[in-house]
Image (cartoon, rainbow, N blue to C red; front, side, top):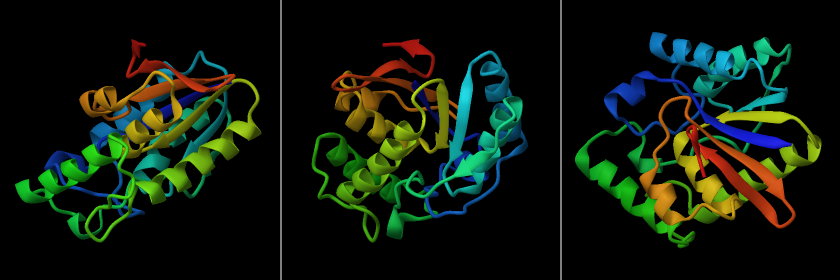
Length: 200
């Protein structure tokens, strides 16, 4: 099987550069809906066997055209939602963005005890996300599984899962709306094949 971790389409919060982590969150913009349709078109020729989404509205709206393209239902699951930023929720000021970046950098460098102010620690995020991905993997031995969630947690998840993704890539390669990371399981774990269309 292959696992595509796709980011949701554009939202009003993205346009404001606001930290928006608390589900259910906002819907997609008109551009976001067009991006979701384009994602479905890109995957039209693939053997998609399941489509999952986080509990956030924007993830479900992005996943819906992909699922429809393949005659599937979107399976909404806990554990895939964006890392919770706590006291920084809804903010777009320089101090908040810097605080977010500092904690996120610590996570990518292995300090999972660090936590967002009033939010989740890296350990909490890792536990819920990886256990959810493991359940999804166990349910689908073949085909392409599409999991629509959020940029921050996808980049962290890719680093935690893949044998060829490290902190440098995680911090340098931001995911655009409906960008994706493509993984495949190997004997010793996972291997990243693509990062937003770029082969690794």
